[in-house]
Image 1 (cartoon, rainbow, N blue to C red):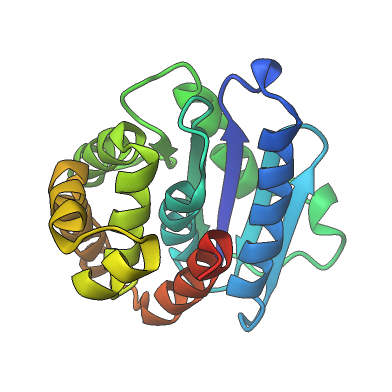
Image 2 (tube, rainbow, N blue to C red):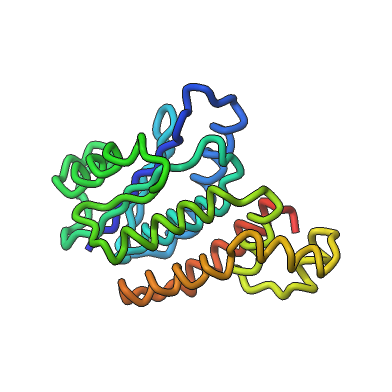
Length: 218
């Protein structure tokens, strides 16, 4: 099985160097997330795109969600297309791999590039997945930077009092921002998706936590 992901920066023609530097940082972080997979490949391609392969089925959907939570540029949202296919890893350079599954992933990405309501795509995505991913898109893209930090730290398992101490805020401030972030709803969406795809995301969540702490310098 191969799980693929293509992430593209929306509106990148107007982005400055900071945006592309952060995409390079994200590439290095995702490399640590998939390092222990049986097969993996992560590459920041020329321009504004990240290409990810993993041998863990459906892994790339959750990589995409966590990547968007780490992404600090809501003015330039990441558009993400993921897919899992029952195929063997490429025997040659993955960058030159032209399997139909990869082409399908890219075609799905092209279909959502101009949409504002959905940042996640997958070939033949069922309605029961498309609708929660629409909500996830709206939640993540609607967060302020502080709300995004609070929601991400809660998702990483940190207690409210510890978040307050880490961000130098009061507990009431953290509570208010978590409520406004709709982070609880996002947690439910992620759990639903993990149950739907029968995917254990505990290890990936741990990697996300480590990356989040590095980004926030905690």
